[in-house]
Amino acid sequence: MKKPVIKLRDEIARLQEQLKQAETKEAGRIGRLALRAGLGDVAVEDSDLIKAFEELSARFRKATGPKAAAPGAPQSNTGTD
Image (cartoon, rainbow, N blue to C red):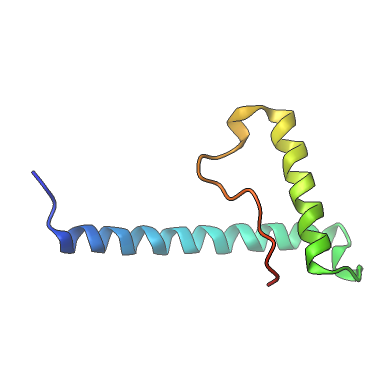
């Protein structure tokens, strides 16, 4: 039986909220680790830092094999926040 459109929209909204919360939690975790590593005291452009994070991510994905990369995970983010 097909779900009514309104139920699908409600489910999508709920999942989007869960995703937002998970991303916020992960951002906090990564931010705390970056501060512990001393990155808060380093004067570096966002684009350079993003490139370094991408290289670090690739290094760990390569080390753990294909299971490490989540399907649909973004591979690059060149914008500045």
